[in-house]
Length: 334
Image (cartoon, rainbow, N blue to C red):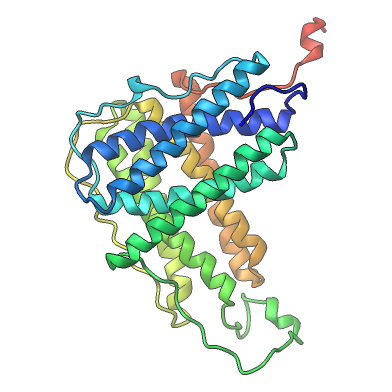
């Protein structure tokens, strides 16, 4: 990708690149540690592929920022990871983590691509979408081969095309509820899986975090994840739909931290943002009013939890400032 061009970066492009740089420097720390600890020879190549892509992205973003005279963010460095720390998670966790990570980056790059225009930046995010798609496919294949992939519930194939002819299709609080739609089931299922994985990740973080405030914040997150997954499972079981029961026994008994508290907190804020976005998408695709109301309650709790995390990071001096617009009133001394 050519970094030098006469066309200035837009605010959208700078913001997307800055965010990608922060996320990828964190990913490099995590992936290097995972590679150091993984024993399964089927899993390691996927971790190495993900690491190579993150390192490539960082190199490209640095070149673009340097050509623009834009300061390189600090992000995360080797100071934020201890590769000698004992394993905190088992090998199966790495597969589920990669599956979750690749799905998130696929969505993030898609959004970034939609708001960028400069050719080199467009090419950068288009390449990111391709590599994320490749990683998702490879990890899914391995999960299937190991019998670890939990499939979404099936639905009956209809005999014919039909149309909605009653407004009661939207109701869910009073009277007889209609059956869940396929897309509603899909989002409930996906969010259950995400909450189980995040609960395991935060449980591990809670064991090894150094600051008491960070430990408590991680434990609060595990409780929220557990509660949300149970609420979503109940929606399925109430309609005689089998709820997915992915394993959550990924965490070892290690108490030695491989990551800095700063990295742990930033990673959690990313995961909170993903959870918020996932529930928001579910709201937009769910037509039953009771589902929308349930998701709104979940979103409110996630938003509150996320704000508490941001405030804690600011208090500790760990929150790197994102790109801001120029405040001309401040410059004018008004």
